[in-house]
Length: 375
Image 1: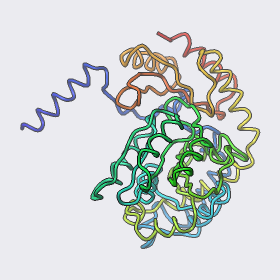
Image 2 (image 1 turned 90 degrees about the vertical axis):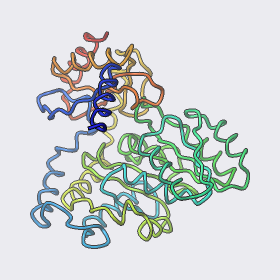
Image 3 (image 1 turned 90 degrees about the horizontal axis):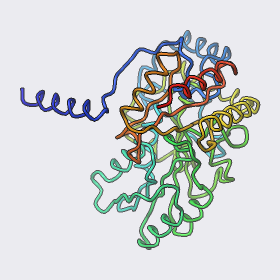
């Protein structure tokens, strides 16, 4: 069939370019510097106990969307805890961080709006910008140079009087650098624009009590600002959240398609995430250990010290990155291997994530192996 032939040809081209991807069952005997369980909470006894109790009470799944049958007291408790930690009037939990970003961009970008998106933003934000344009005449996305408030100011100034939304990550997911959030907020407010911050890789890692990059910048609860995050990183769970003023919450519940038409987060996951949230808020010692390990890894790998737990190490090309990651795996270390088109700049690298759930000597052993296998 012609369409299968076309798919085979495209697969062959990806293979030739070193861009083929493989699904592999997780091997739990590897030293994990690839996952996002920064604080090691996914296996914490309190988290597992809360999830097990909810699993027994509610069953495996939520059995419906939040508006039909999926909302439980556990969901509302989690949302209250997230709103309190993040410093906003309300929070709404989604079944994934990806859906939260799609929903947030769509809700905040008014018809005919200009969306200014950082060049290194996550794919979920990119897709959110595309979704926001669908069926809306005049809505436009422009890509701003990475972490450049002056460029954002210039783009907004070129469209005076137009509704606008500036979108950025706080700690960027590929290179782990920190966005200049205070300057971006100032630029947005000077031109009447809203600012949306994806705090996925900052929640639990930086800020007072692990409240994230927005709180670290002194912007928690600020007007004209909303935050998204995932529950699958420092909280060790799954799901996503949008935090902002109550009016945004109302808009999302009434009109947000990625919320209304999606099955709710399982109650057991909500319960585990709520327990993890308490541990995260009191986890200053875990964050101190994460910072120490990140600084040690950056020094040994000769890369900049990251803002959070993401460490990016350049590889000569996609084939070399793949071979390097495989060599580490063969010696018992799991690392992230990022290649185009997943990288915003077209460069290949290993992405390491600090995991304080590993024993200190195991973490140092993993670094030894990564260095020894470096191309």
